[in-house]
Image (cartoon, rainbow, N blue to C red; front, side, top):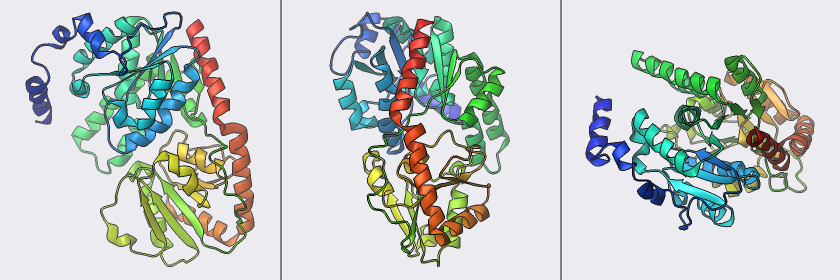
Length: 423
């Protein structure tokens, strides 16, 4: 029924004629693809072009956080070696005001797809994307967000047009989707199987696959049955901005401030975190902080004095808050390389996380299992052993400086794409 509704809705309000008829006129389509400042597409033909796709859909304010933090870090290393084109149906003023500045100050082009793009059928999307590729003539096309949405379309578009594709895989989307459904129906199982096939196709057929962690690299290598074309690339962190609070004294007997940052969904391990809050409800030595754009329905259970609800927090304000925290809880069941974890470690925060999410126990990490008990035990130990808390804090900060600094990863990304463009 819902498929029929979408089809009728699409036909009535968006497509009075077929997609091929609407986009056959190159002049009209070129107008659509003009940069928002009015400049034309073909500006610097001496540079190769890289086309970035997505996000296709938008949910405020979550995409605002992700886009403002992620897209500039993806674009900046590429800007010196290529002409960068960002393709999305979402106006950059809605994604994040910072993108306006990014577009204006750099040789970057932000092209708006029709708002109805996310409702199009696969064949209709193909017509639109092929027309864009023909006009822009990119050497490389890469998705900026999820594999299931823009990643699959990106890879098949590249194959149709004979250009290189880079598939960016932040994490195991299919596993996360399954985790959110405790008792899946036959329809939901079928949908998960459909998602799995799309993801497997994209992973197998992309020229290069960019992964966010060593765990993801191993998973993708297994899917491709080869390590060729798989490379590790994280966003990194500005270690000068995300840094510990000056003269912070871990040995003081003040309560320990524990942070949870992210979406309040099951795949992020909220069942573990919420049980931890209940277990420490009467403990004056622990204060929990929730930083999330979402809300929890059962607010009554959080009417205790050791919880502070911050709600949505702009990314620019995150360093100031992290300086006031002592520990980060990352109970996710599935994750790439959590940006919150990287930023927390740069601020000298030990991180408690499920062992399988990051199998290598880095300095400053504490591995836990997939239940609240081990998280509670680990946190209790830090509360009672401030010397250990201090050691982990120093180790986390030092590791972040040596391995997570964004300058290191910007150079690696530039090198990877330079090689791809040469090929």
